[in-house]
Image (tube, rainbow, N blue to C red; front, side):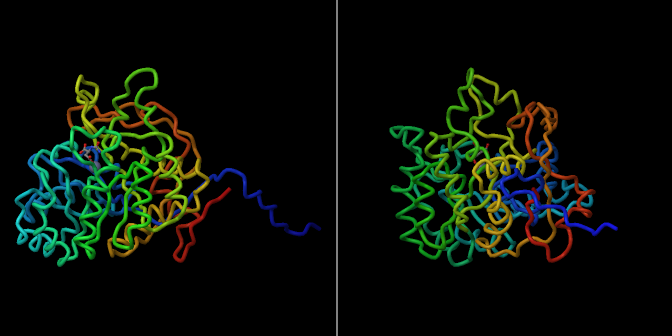
Length: 378
Ligand code: NCD
Ligand code: ZN
């Protein structure tokens, strides 16, 4: 007679083979509008429960009414049966009236974005001097709207690789001192200076970090020739900065959370003599992050980064339900359609280590039951 035996537990240093986490949110996303939006939105809705929708359309989203109309167009493009909520933002300009902030807050807009004029894609209507938006910032502080910051100076005398660090001194520190109660998200940080600043700036300052800034340093822009699909703003930095970002997420600090900054541009605009800034990562965002966290030995910090810290900072409930990633190599398509135009995902044509399990298979996933704990199976 044989006695039932529990199989021996594999040693903890074996590579993880599945990863189940609470449904995550993307706290920084560009989906554009019209046919482009209808094409890219389903990729995000498949992975994330909510996303902060960036307002840098042409023309930009500068009123509560525009934000609500944009929200309705996005909601109409969410595939049937998929649970996804866009969180709307306003684009700050030198002239945005404090009244508009109040109307936006009342309509459910959660944040407003500071683009220094000329800093990045579709930022020409942005702010020329942060003092011009002080009345709007006062209204935001009162209404509880978050301030989202593209943290780069535009001074042509400042080297492009230093623009984030200089922004901290010239803009961020004075702004923090003048609006201590305003909740500020330093978006897509890329430097050691920004990681250190955010870690020490107090509970009202947080940062998003993209997958590509965790995975790549600036060498990626030049391997074997210029690589336009790796060009985004803020531009990739030296390895020491990438290491500082990895250390920030591996610390488990709740000041850091997921924001893909997935920014689709038609392939012909990327592969042109002047290449637009932006990396399209929505097709495989969670897979790219999982790869970065695994390489940093920080998979145990991934769920909180992807699914808890952002919601907590924004004062929104954490999501129910889960997503599961399997260690299952698969090759990303080289190109997908964006309306009429081909769109090339970052790492297109290459093999990724992780793959999100399709929603239909999730009911049987180990973490799908209520009351689950995050699980990393080895
Ligand atoms: C973004 C875009 O394309 O809208 N581009 C980018 O390189 N990240 C704008 C932005 O977030 O800076
Ligand atoms: Zn962005």
